[in-house]
Length: 196
Picture 1 (cartoon, rainbow, N blue to C red):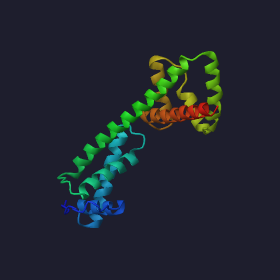
Picture 2: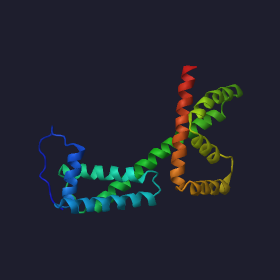
Picture 3: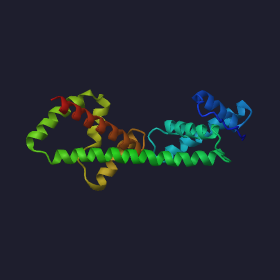
């Protein structure tokens, strides 16, 4: 691993291609070896994110390397790139979990508002929700219907685990996908309610 001279020009912005090239050079002065080391690091990060249940491990690995490359190429000393990237990866997991928790909270608030609504309000929300639901693909509609079946306790957790298995994904990835669909529906309903 090599040190790069710090760029003292505050106005200079490097392109992502230039940053990537410098990062590969940091891994090894030999371009081919640097490329192999990059691929090995990327695959290691994809595996790490997959084990942690991140829904899109490839984009998470890309984001990790982008952040590391930016820091390294701007002069931050990094004695062990793998450990440094692993630290960034852990932060990305925390960020994504916090975002998922916020999304879940918004949905729970939406459901709570729905539960506290009068019969007329519930009917109005149904009328707003139907066209939003119909905008989803058939696969998304079926996923929401299967995921949101009214099952209580451990049976619900087991049902969702089996559903994730049939979709060859993790329960966390499934939950995140459903949360995004629910949030999309909630946004659509809110937009339609502002129109009407």
